[in-house]
Image (cartoon, rainbow, N blue to C red; front, side, top):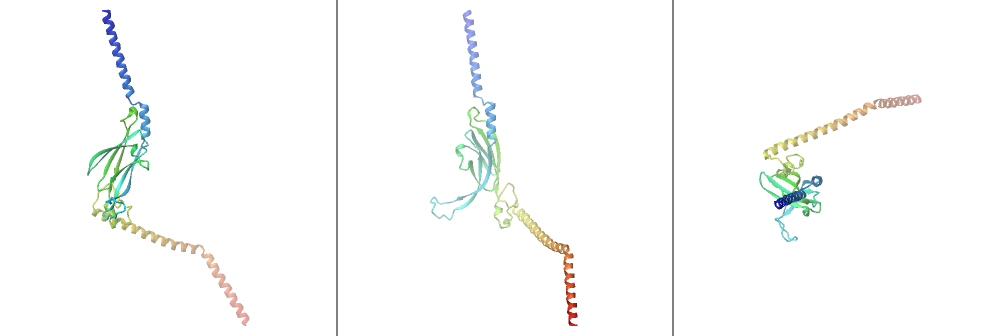
Length: 250
C-alpha cells in the first residue's frame, strides 16, 4: 500500500515538473515586451514615398542598334527607406481597376540609394498600397510592427495637351492626379483659369504704371518750392542783366 502511494506521489511530481517545464519553454518562445517595443521604435523610422520617373521601353537587345519602336514610359517608383535585417516588408496592393496582389521584400533588396524600390507602371488607374513592416528578429518574428498606406496617383494624359502648356501648376494640368474629370471640364476650367491669370497681369501692369506716374507727381510736389525758387532767381538775374545793358547803352 505504501509502495502504491509512493509511486502515485512520484507520478504527480513528475507531471508537475513536466508542466512547469512546458510553461517555461512556452514563455521562452514568447516575444518580450522589451524586444517588441525596441523593434517598434526602430520601425517608426521606416518611411515610404513615391517618385515619378521614366524608363525606356521597346529597346532592341543590342544597345548599339537603332530601334524606331523605343519610347519613354512614365512610371512611379515606390521607395521604402530605413529597412534593416530585422524587418521584412510586405506589400498588399489594390485598386478599382487592377487585380489585388501582394509581395514581400527585405534588406537584400535595398538599392544604391538606400531604399527598396518597386517600379509601378503609371497608367489610367490609382493603386493603393498597404505596406506592413514585419519583424524578422528572434522570438518576435512575424509580429507586425507598423503599417504604412501609400496611394499611387494615375497619370493625367490631359496634361500633355496644348491647353495645359504653361499652366502645369493648375490642378487639372498636373501630370499625376487622384481624381477623375472629363475633357469638357478640363477646357472650361483651364480657359477660365488662364483668363484670370491674364486679368491679374493686366491689373499688375496698370498698377505699376499708375504707381510710376504717382511717384513722379509726388516727386514734383515734394520739390516744387525748390523749382519755384530756381525759376524766380533766374528771372531776377535776367532782369538785372537787362537793366544794366539798357543803362550802358544810354
